[in-house]
Amino acid sequence: MSEPERPSVSPLGDAKHFAEHSEGFKIDPTDDDSVDAKLAEIEMAGEEVAIGWKPAAVPPLAPEVRFLHQSRTIHQLVSDRNRSVGIFLLVASVLINASAGLLKTELPVDPIVSMRAIRYWCLPVTFGTLAVLGGFTSLLLIRSRIGLIYEVAKMNVLLGLPSKRVERVNPLSIFYIMHFMVAVFGGASAGFTAGMLSLHRWGVVSAIGIGVTVGLLYIIFFQAIYYVTILRNTTETKLQTVRG
Image (cartoon, rainbow, N blue to C red; front, top):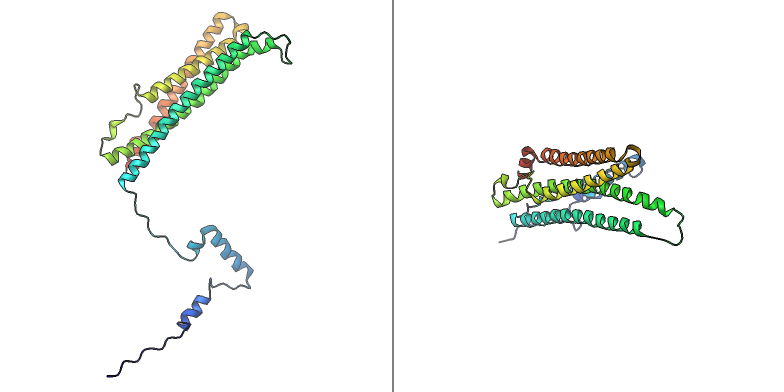
């Protein structure tokens, strides 16, 4: 029995296919506008997209991997909270000790800036700096609290725990206590600054009243920002979106 004849194959493959492949991007190299347009397309969309290549779908992360990632994120947020409060207390301690040292300093030669002026302004500048730093620390604590709420919401989905396990604003939480402490210290610093600056102009009684008023307004302002910002950015609708 004779074997069936095999179709002859050119060593260069199919001529039609080879011709189409040799066309490349199918543009006229003599047309500068066409070349520039194609190069701009490649630059904007990427070579892979321009030639029609699409990456394969990436499989979703396993629940264990997501659990570890969210645990690490929660740990970082808690570390940011502790670090920001620690820096605020450290700077407050250093500035107050430096101001106390200036008040006791007796130099044999008066510097270019009068030592009397330095002593006069050191406490208002110190407390004013602490008031500003307290405001920034308060905002950092609010940001960390919002991030923690979202990460805990996703963690509860993985663990199958109720979504109400962590309250958004809890007066007994460490976050709230730390924020309130920073707000009180910052308010006291703002009150001392306002009272010192208004002492000679308005008298002792008025200066005390101004300082107390400024301090209370400072505390109320940042406490209100804490409540409003957290409750507005962690609504149940937004948390449901994250859980989904």
